[in-house]
Each structure stands twice: as C-alpha cells, then as structure tokens.
Image 1: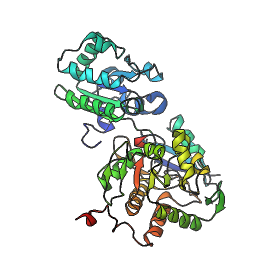
Image 2: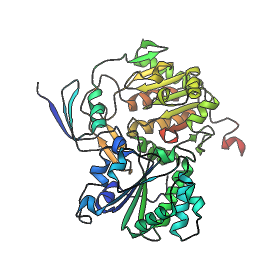
Image 3: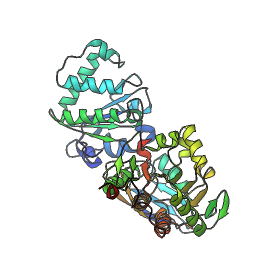
Image 4: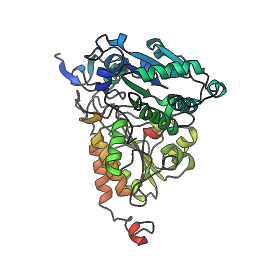
Length: 115
Length: 319
C-alpha cells in the first residue's frame, strides 16, 4: 500500500516542538517518523486512527458524544467552584475555548505549569 | 513569566557561546535540544560549532546530560536558591563566606571560575528544568535564576529560558496570559481573573478539597498527582477529554474521547521559546477534536440562565 508522506510535520511530545519530522502514514497509523527522537517516534507511532475506545463514557458506561456533552455541561453548571485544568497536550485553539468556558463558569483555571 | 529576559532558540543556535542547563536532563527528556539548538550547530558566529561553545550542567546528580557538558556542578538538593543568590552576589563582587558556599555543596573557587566564564561569554543562556522550578523554593528558584540572567546583562548578553515538558504547555501559558493577563493558577469566580499560585493552583485546590467539579483536558492528573488530590478527583464529578482512556478517565464521571492534537487534529502549538508552530496532522480521527468538544460544552452551558452576574462578590454588586 502506498504511504502518504507528510513533510515538516510538527511533534508535540515535548517542549522542543520539532517541526522537521517526515511522517509516512497510511489511513490508520503512522509507520515511520523520520528525524524524530526516541520520544517523538513512540509518540507518533502509538497514536492511531482506529476506533479503540467508545465515543464517550458516562459513569464508566459507553455513551454517545451528545449525551456526554449534555452531562458534562450539567456537572459544570451545577458546580459552585468548578476547575478547568490541564491544557498541555492540546492545541491553542482548544485552550482558548477552555479559557472562554472557565470565564463563563467563573471557574478555577490552571495548567501543568503549576504542578 | 512576562518580563523575563529571553530569546528564541534560533538565537541560541546562532549565537550562544555559553550554555547552562540547570536542573534539567535534556539528553533524556529533550533529546534533540543539543543537536538542534544548543551544542552541535555551527553558525556564522560560532563557525566551529561545539568547539566554540562552553556548556555547564548544574544538577543534584550526574545525569546522562553531564557527558555532554564541559563542566558539571553538583549542587546539594534543595540548595538551588542559595547557590543562585550566591552567584548574584559574586558577579557584583560582594563578599560571600566559604561556609555559605560550602552549604551548597560547591567551593568558592569553582563558583569564581564559573562567574569568570559567564562574564567572558559573548552570549550566555541559562536553561532551567523542573529540577529547579519544582523542588524546594519552586517559583522563587525560577525567579532567582531569571534575576541572575537579567543582572548578568550588566556585563554581557545573557538570557534565560525554561525547558518546558509536555508539548503545548507553553501554549497554555501564552493563551491564558493573552486572555486573562496571568499564565496559570487563576480564579475567575469573582467574574474577573485573579492570580495566586498556592491558592488557585490545582494540586493545592485538590488537596484542600476546594473544588466541586473538575474538567481535565490534555492531562492525566490521576497518574501524576499526590494521592489526596487524586482521591478528591474521584469524589467530585470529573470530566476528562483525552485520546485514550487514562487513569483519570477511570475515576471520572464523564470521559470523552478526542482526536490526538498534532497527529489527527490540526491547530497550533507553542515551542518552549514561545514560537508558535502549525500542527500537521497525518491521520483522520474517528473522534472530534478537543476544540470542537470544548466549544460544544461551552455552548450548552451558555444556553442556561446566567447565575454569575448578580452574585454578592461581583464588582457590580459592590458599588
């Protein structure tokens, strides 16, 4: 099978954010991550496009995304002092949404930096 | 960390002839840092590459990174702040006693030699890791190092930069600074941002049991935080967004699977020197991106009646 080649891909495993990685991928997984270090290689090769997990889990039971969003919104809205935490392994666009949500909720907002 | 004296890694690569790693182990944690930015690269200003650079490692033990360094200074655990303060005194020719230096596990002779080399450098850079910023003294240690870097500019060009761990943690700092004015440890419960690490930082909030609902994204505190914090996460409704079912997912009330950023979700990530990089996903995920899910949760919350505006702690209610 022909592999798709992505040049100058960006690795977000560590803070170096190397942007010169050459990825060889099919539809499901990345087979090669050239120029990446050992950490970057395992980062790229261990994530696949397979459907390994349910869309969502509510109280440990598989659920749909719509249900999970509704329940999550409920918990957050009902809380007196919600906490929005993490935001390291995600994009700036998602981080911006998190800040907007924390603002709406009057929440605590924090990242890995404080750990 | 607004106001720190810093630069980009491109400048380090092209100009830095004196490099200090403090409390970090790049050989194992940032494997390409040496080859891409600090040690091996040749440039117009450093034509002989590694030979034109002096590398110092300061750490509590001799890690693999020590092999790559010209000088290794073994500081006594928990004495980083003292050592940095002594260096700040020494660069200004202040008197420091042998006993004070001995407490840090080093000798005055070694430190004077280090100061001499620092002052003789054309472009010095100090990288500091979690070994400095997450041990006794915490952000005060980082502040001491940043101050040392700033004060070194009385003699020569000197900068400092944190060695950031997880991929886009720099982006989180940048986005929070942009949106709230503060980089982390923020409370918005009065309707405006307040900053107080120790009070609003997550570990402390969880250990004290000060939150009644936790939203966790791109992190796995269930695997990294102290036991009392994890216990509290299990007690309150916790919501997790992650590409995998993590330790935190297992104790959460809601887990939503999302596409891994940079691999199957597009967007932007910040490098440790605060240079933004576009992500180039190689795969198409069957799951939605973090961005989409958070936006949908926020929109769902926004449909409900606003309860914040008329609270007694709001500014409007107090004037």
